[in-house]
Image 1 (cartoon, helix red, strand yellow):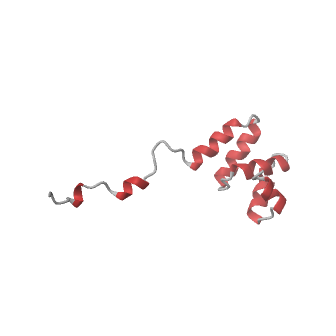
Image 2: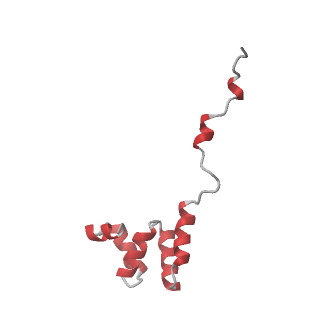
Image 3: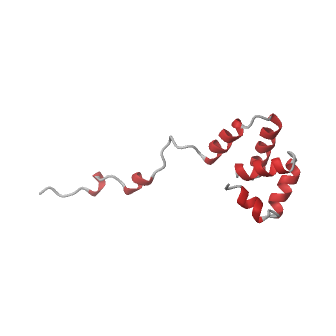
Length: 92
């Protein structure tokens, strides 16, 4: 019987590597932004992402609620002043 060469075996890490074909969270976010028809809202969503707010659904919902006011949305997100219903609406 031939001895097993440990250096000629597939690495278990190879099984868990991310495929290069998978989209990054940033790519997914901006694909969603591209679907938005209003250019003002697209710009606001881009700004919110640049500020570090990366949840598209939450950003979009709050922009609609606050008539596209990026500053109000950013303040709401920074202060954690989301109501339970607002947070729940993001998943409905």
